[in-house]
Structure formats: C-alpha cells, structure tokens
Image (cartoon, rainbow, N blue to C red):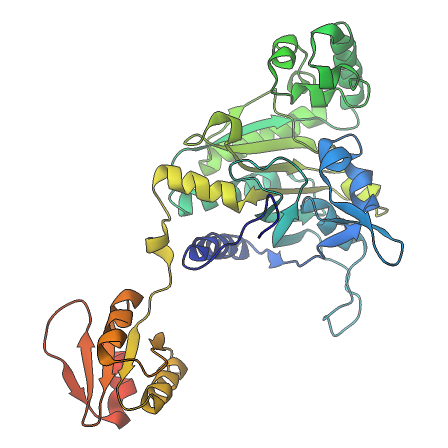
Length: 420
C-alpha cells in the first residue's frame, strides 16, 4: 500500500495533471522563463538557514542522515533549492562548463514536495507544485509580471472564483522597528494567545499573526500591521505594484494580516484563495519577494521573487467549479486498428500511423472481432480500421454509416486527410 499521506495518480485522471503543467509551461515560456530541475534531496542547512523558526523546518521536514553521514532532507518547498542553484550553478549537461546565470534569471519548475504533516484536502505528505522564480532585480514591475502569470494560469484553466490577497512585509529598514512594536503588543497579551504561540513570541512574532486558532485571532485583531508602517522605499514599491496590477487587470484585495509560512519573504507578498473550496483549506498558491535569500545561502546580495502553486489544490478548485474534468483533457485516439488475420497487419499498420503523427492503438492477444470492437468503442477513437483476409475498411466509430474500402498503400494518407 502507498504510505500514509501519499497516493497514486493513474490514467486517465493523470491527464488533468498534464493539462495543468502544459498550460503553466505555455504561459511562462511565453514570458521568457526556462525550466530548472533541482535535486529532490538537499543538505538540511539549505532550509534551516531560511526558515529556522517556521513549522516547515521545525516540524514538517523529512530529514535524516544518509549512508555517508550527511544530514539531508527531502525538498519541503521549491524556492530555497532554486536559490541554492543560483549560488552554485550546475555544471551538468551544459557542455561548456559552469555558466553564470543571466540577470534577471527567470526559471520555472515542476516538483513534488514533502512535508510530514496531517494530510488534508489537496495537501498531502507528498504533493506537487508548479512554480517560478526570478533572481537579480527588485523592479516592482517584475512583481506585477509574476503575480499576473499566476492569475493567468487560473483563468486559462477556467477558474472564475480565485481571489488574490496582497500585502507588503517591508524590508530590513522598516521591519525591525515593526517587529519590536508587535513583540511588545503580543507580550502584553501573552495569556490570551493559544498554547502553541504563548512561548514562541520572541522566536518570530509574525508567526502569531498567521495563527488561525480563535484565541490568537481574537488577541491579534487590533495588532499593528506591517503594511501601515512601511518605510518610504517600501511604500513606493508597494504603490507601484498596486498600480501595475490595476493596469494589467489583475484584481486584488490588500490584506494586512497576510503572513506566509516561511521567514525569507520581504516586501510584496501574496496568496491566491479558491473561494469555491472550504475556507480552512482554500489556499491555491502564493509567494512573494525574498530579497535576502540568496545572501543567506552564501551568495551575493540578490533580490528575488517567485511563487508555488499546488496542483492538487488547483484540481480541487476545478472540481468545485466544474472545469478541467477528466473527460475534457484525457488523451483521445484518432484510430483504433482491428485485425482478424493474426495481428501482424495491425502491428504494422499501427506503427505506420504513429510514424505519420496519427494517435493509434490496437488490440492484442488475438481477440475476437467482437471483443476488439468493444475495446475500440471504449477507447474513444474517432475512426476504426478493420483488417480481414479480404479487405481493409475505415469506419467512423460513433455513427452507423457505411465503411470505406481502402488500399494498403494509400491507407495512411487517406486517414490523415480524414482527420484534417
């Protein structure tokens, strides 16, 4: 059996995953993003450096010692590994040795993520994400591009009830003073907080704002918010992002309480909510700017921004809105080949059709004509080719019209013409 919190994705349902990935790839490659493929395993310090106070690092990572005595982890999120690869460009498969990334460095990825947590709707111990990262510029117009690309994916999939929450978490110039103010506010209300956060205020007070338990929600209702205490540069950056989103037609709501689950976020921070899902589990993806992440991994000061979108949660939203159903995206055959002469003819004709770009399949095990026809009807193919000892015929499977008799040497060309 599959391990708890994991699952198999089998055809034809797997076609929905393919559709999400293909749509995402089409969108981001048009914007100049290239595919990055990172290892699933990393040194645990890659993630400890960027989120030591978060639940992801403290409680949810799959980390262990390998046979070489190295402390490693299965990837819990996509961004830190991409940033590590920016600091240490790969020499694999380049043919020309180590290549320094260009600036801005625009990449996208598809990855499984691993978190040891209680499985919930659309979030499992292994789940899957598409995402992108841009390193090398702090231009707020790039923030607009990144957010618009995510919003464009949801629209392209047919989702109508996905909303965008937006805020700014400031930077090293304005956040320290805000942190002190928030810490004083929470310390004065320590006894009102939930049990988990009572003793963790000093570690990262912003985490308390992200708590969904009633005691913390009530106690922080009047807490100071970072978005109201931005320095001049952060405020100008945030204003430019908002104007840009308005200009490109991406609707949003400023949410001063928004706090992402990792420590590296600065300035622009955002989250998409699938309103058709239960409110406790309707996060469909998010991200933000992380201008200090590369430096924390040993690289030069390098601004960056990105997002990750959970495929399982997106598909749940599609189910709730009745879009991107399996029947809409499952691969369809053009032709099914039926052969009552022993199978050799079906083998050869199927190979010819596929070589000509026609989606074709056939039956095996020398089945009867009736059994082959049942399989052809189940396949969803548009046409059937029947081969017997006397003739070859092409028929449309979904109607009862008369079949066409064909010659073997013109079969492939005729099928391609019929398919248009």
